[in-house]
Image 1 (tube, rainbow, N blue to C red):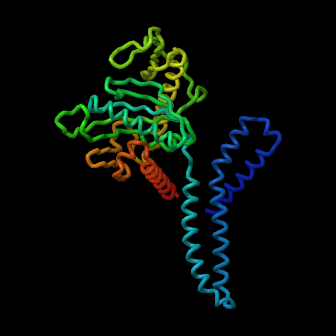
Image 2: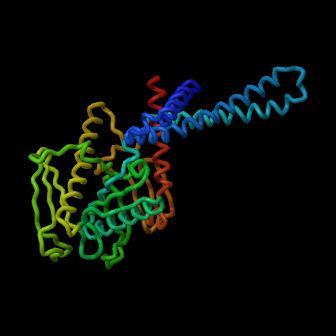
Image 3: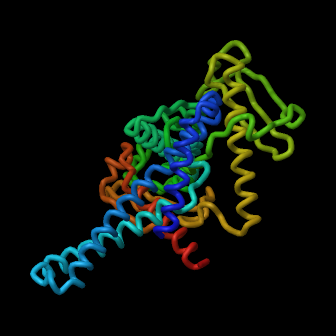
Length: 358
């Protein structure tokens, strides 16, 4: 472990050297790439230095225990030895986690798609609740959110809403939220007071740019039409809404929320690129026989991942078996408890895979 960390530390020093090189400093793209790499390496190097200090202290304690002339210090040295052995074990485990291969998408912004599922109007209202939950979570972390496309119902719900989350590490924190979310409660539209079960699906897609996903003009059919709101009211007299149909895959994306046809077109292409990128990632995963989300489930939209039970104020994540009785706080954006547990499960699975391979 120390040898692996020493190699990382040596590479970190080389990155530092390159950043100070006057020749490289004029290449802004290269400087940006090196600065990002340095930022990724810093936690590993810091952990390496902690381990070295602890190991040096352990060696000193053992040297005292091996010296009969310092018998009066053996009691203290044994206590220190036991404490340092435990600390080194903890630091080593933390270092192993830091050395795990990083998901290349972790630093990306994300596009989140929420759709009302089973349950009609109640499912659409639940989709609105999930939108609020993720929006407030993003606000708490200092991220920016922007709705790209929305199809509203007449009572404040969403048949579908697509929004962008912009901020450092957005994908790394939200990537396990994809799947079916289930709610159990008495709907506002239910007169008899019976508890209903409804669902909404969530998809979390990393945002990609035009360079990464090239979409030839011949592959896209573009339709321009008039925007319409809930109930069919005309939002715009002019034709500003845009519908894209990707001919090779059959994917359809539409945006109508902006007043500008150009803005709607740009948003629609952004969503289309994210969906195409996700399709390509899933294809690659199938080819290597492993899903990037297998540690907490397949990530398929048909998979039930979490239940929000209002009568019991209970939220249960079925992938990691975590239950919280803080439903009100969770639905208002306090979801770090679940995300942290999912990340820990992911790290444990990947660590086990590496150890098994060795």
